[in-house]
Image (cartoon, rainbow, N blue to C red; front, side, top):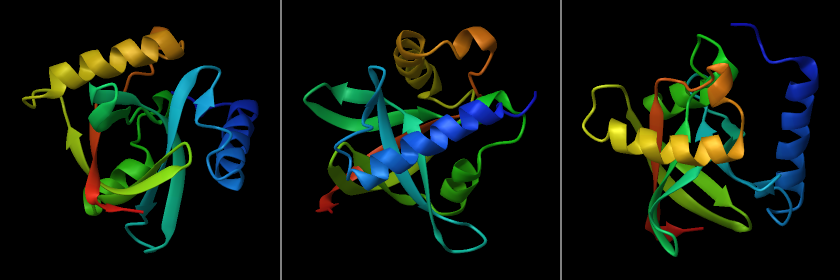
Length: 153
């Protein structure tokens, strides 16, 4: 599949910069869609890497046990770099709005025990939020991100 067009890539970079520059005051919701900042460690560089992702809450609305993101990479065949980083080191940091916290990621693939439930959760959130599913941008991996409540930032 082709790379996302330049206008979309520029918009996504702008959204991420706005989210970061405002300290999460602006950017948590994009056209009503909940977004988080995921901070990982580069698997080769060791540098901090950040990406903005649409997420679905797992657990009670007022006390989520985790968050689900989809590693679709805009429909490209190659996995996104942030997924490869999490596979190398599942320790991460997430920012939802103005709140940041340490987290741990777990990757689920088709056939894994909880994959179907996470698929339903992400699919419901993504279908309400974006037309990606209709274009085939569903990805085959779900990532469950669990906040480390003992080490909140």
